[in-house]
Image (tube, rainbow, N blue to C red; front, side, top):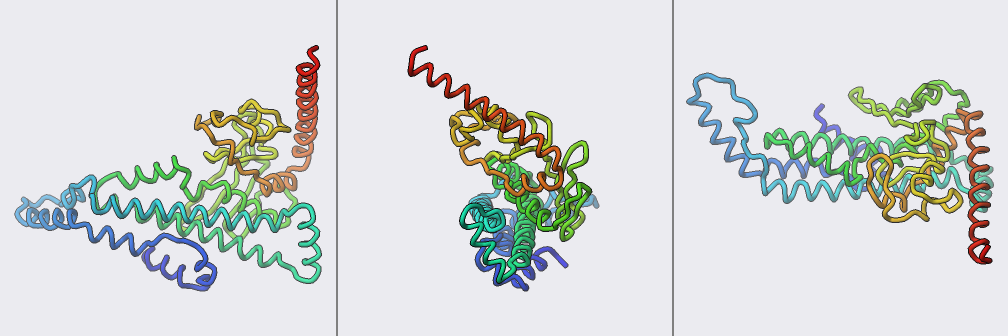
Length: 336
């Protein structure tokens, strides 16, 4: 079955009630945009005539379409795809936030949810929604990848490949979302195993924290596997109390604060807009950093001794920084 048919079947299948609330890639519409490209069609027809008088050489893709850029496609195709990718990323992140909030609620809401669970067990519903969100983001990511390949094939260009790089630079790469890592950790936490071995959930996510390089993996259709490195690039240890910056890079909170020249107790919200990511050097990535609560919970459950050791060290550093800060403020006010 072709992907277009598979995607259509997915959109109108058992999860249609769920997908009605979300944006998705208009795969068939984008294919029609490519088919309506008159420039490519004219070149195709012209090259077909030339092929008839050719001396027997095998025609190549570049013979059928020589245009590296098409005004008709570029204006409609990439604008539409950018809008759809933005909406999909927004829908996914907002829904995952809501789902995870129900799982890691704090304060009074936590007690209300616990009381509710005495009468109704919502865990199965959470698991089902988590699975549907994973399928939602992966199916749309594959649809974007497929349609960009079709663009390059029709135009014999690399514009589709370049657009994918642009999406990554603008943080619209769906499968690199920190919320997908959070969703994977959420699924593994619901799995309930306390061992540190290679743990699988629903055939999609797996996590190995005991390896030299701790990773979380996501299995996609067609045997495609994505790996998410859980090593902090600053301390070179498994991330503790992890935060994902807007650029997508993961760091321990203490390491990120150190890189941004702020105290741990001040938090990443106190960073300067000019502060840059230690890896990609992009500025302004700290203000909207995502606290990875589910990932931290996963590490706490699977890697207990390490987590406790890091917790003690971070608390000691926080107390020291706080003490030094207020002593300096007191000296500044008093004058000695």
